[in-house]
Amino acid sequence: MVRVSKILIVDDDKHIRVLLKTTLARAGYAVVEAASAREALNAKGIDKPDLVLLDLGLPDRDGLELLSLLRADSPCRIIVVSAREETEQKVAALDLGADDYVTKPFDSDELLARIRAALRQQAPAPEAQIVRLGAVEIDLERRSVRRQGEMVHLTPKEYALLAALARHPGRVITHGQLLRTAWGPAQESQTEYLRVVMRALRQKLEDEPSRPALLINEPGVGYRLQGD
View 1 (tube, rainbow, N blue to C red):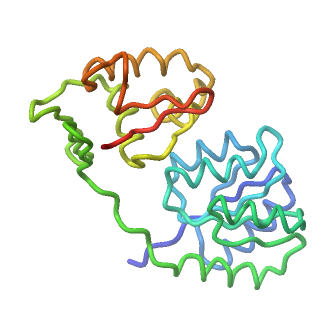
View 2 (tube, rainbow, N blue to C red):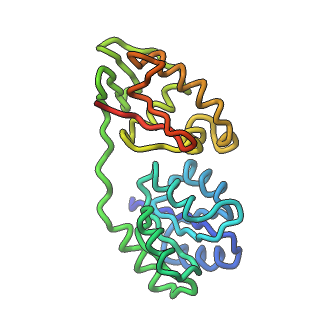
């Protein structure tokens, strides 16, 4: 059986969503819709689309910010479809990880061609299943963590945060991204949850928890997993 590619439309304009859904359905794609950034993040996690058509003018979050969130932990392709024509907007979107940028109004045939081109692009290399940072070894496939060769017991929340950081070692993962990963979108402003769990992780993984060398805080932004 031929696998049908799934496309997520993120646009607060109902008429645009209807137009895109009709065009995509006729071309043989499965379609998911979202009218806001929150809906888009939920749909990405549940429906796991192969490609996202993203409008930048959303009611609850700027599309460029959403783009960076979608790109941070997802291999899906992203095509921005926006009325913003300024060069700096296009450059910002592409720098944040968009695969293409189409301005409104768009030609449906051209958009379909760009979608086909994006889906043909080589899939990213699979993530490393074992991440070693100093004395700590994180096995993402087996969901296990060792320190100096000894198994470390982590709670589900502790492991979820550590795994999110381990998938991008050295990269800062924002508070919001980590909170969505471990607690869901409804709790993305509860940074105190993060502080409590990170404190527990440091007690279990750091040589000197009060002077962390592995789990690094970037004040006001997020955390990163730092290796030697």
